[in-house]
Amino acid sequence: MNAQVPLIDPFARAISYLRVSVTDRCDFRCVYCMSEAMQFLPKKELLTLEELDRMCSTFVRLGVKKLRITGGEPLVRRDIMTFFQSMSRHLESGDLEELTLTTNGSQLERFATDLYAAGVRRINVSLDTLDEDKFARVTRWGRLPQVLRGLDAAQKAGLRIKINAVALKGFNEDELLTITQWCASRDMDLTWIEVMPMGDLGGEDRVGQYWSLRDVRDVYASNYIVSDLAERSGGPARYVRLEETSQKIGFITPLSHNFCESCNRVRLTCTGELYMCLGQEDMADLRAPMRSSDDDAVLEAAIHAAIARKPKGHDFDYSRQKPDGQVTRHMSHTGG
Ligand code: SAM
Ligand code: SF4
Image: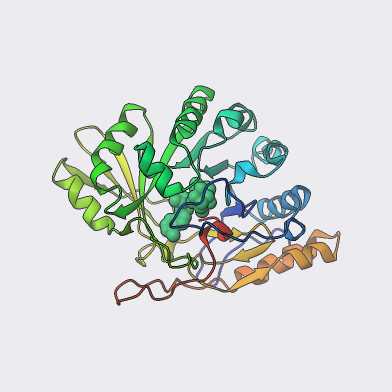
């Protein structure tokens, strides 16, 4: 297969966005994401930082323009800054348009300046509540002041921040407007995410339950004039503007099928498995072909073969009593 052939899937969607989970480990244990006794992969299973570089660089050569680093918590992986520094060469050459990450914010105080120096300009920080006790309850091991210091450091370093909040019924419902105003006051974007049926959480209390973003939108509509925006990112996010404040609010409703037709992304796990769809079990192992040869043509052929299997859409379905189409792996495995 020719390296110049771009990644186009069977439904004529160009693949230009790669999300890479660089570790399955995390310093938090968010109740909707992991059980407290989460078993992690043996370290030897992980791609080395050099192998992650080779994987990502191959995808960039095949036309990926946006790289999002995630996890687990990406900033707890040892020496991860060397990986960011190394990826910055693709930004400098113009082959890559954006290098970014999704983080819980716990390590930002330490790494914000280095991230900016590596060419990162925008980051997503996950934060579901502004109440210290509730934060400790939902993340189990997280501490809010540490994350707030991280946000300060990130803004000081020049990073633009988007807050991702999981909408949890009975948990952060009462904070919708407070979180919105707080984001406006700090000039941060805000996106609400619907909770997804991922992984076996050991039957533990999910803290909140599924809270439809339609209801979230209704709360906004009774407090603001809400205008729908046409803007799409090739992903599941839809945007509205609150006219009174000009704030743009995103809604990620992965349980609806409204984004699959424009899906431009695939996900690589820290062990080199490529998931062509977040909501499906099918994946392609890229680690074996990569390790089998120093010639990148072997890896490129494996990537092309995987993209040829990208499904049309996912099977999540909350319309019945129990979440149907539940996938057994955790979000921290595929990186959200
Ligand atoms: N640790 C980083 C963080 O929390 O931002 C990156 C990885 S985390 C798996 C990525 C995103 O997935 C976070 O915004 C988190 O809230 C979200 N997430 C995790 N489990 C989820 C679930 N079951 N449903 C919806 N979102 C989930
Ligand atoms: Fe860790 Fe992110 Fe999962 Fe929370 S959502 S446990 S911070 S990986």
